[in-house]
Length: 225
Image 1 (cartoon, helix red, strand yellow):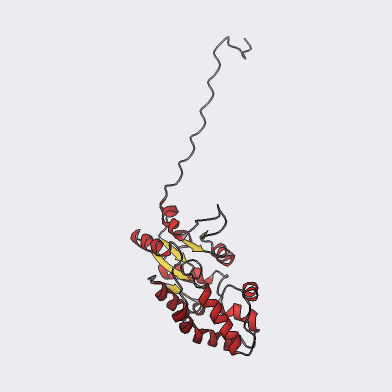
Image 2 (cartoon, rainbow, N blue to C red):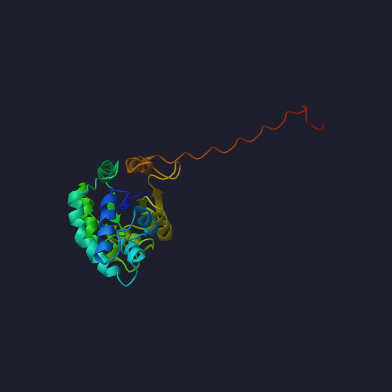
């Protein structure tokens, strides 16, 4: 496989957005008349997109109103709570760019809040595919297909890197090689900074064919003469 492009997840892979996300979820619930959810409740209701998480927290009828509240609170939260790049993310983006690889982000959050996160973290990635850009968002394959299509690449010419099971499922559905970042040892790179080296490592050499056993000399042990 010749890799010509890399698609990256946003939250938890490129940017540490959890504190901002939790603050906005709590504010959104409060704005629609519900109690502010605990950390445990948010953890058990987390989904692959911002809207799907809010549906689980407030129910389908109030989800759109909660999403509007979430979006309104987002720049305020971002001004008060840091959303730094994940360890190794800035170095990885720089290294992948230097290698001449096409880069894109595929995220389950809105385009508006995704762009704010990238700017806050100081990360410049030329392509962004967000929740609104597809009919079936993460973990469906459509976002990755759209991203690689906009990069002008086939599925076997790109890799995807993410940090959750949702990302792994999305990559598998799209038929794209996927790296789980920061997972259990042996499941993928410990940090995004390791990804460029993984992509440029030489393929292991094929094992040599076993040598044929020499024919026994005449009269030697094992002969039937």
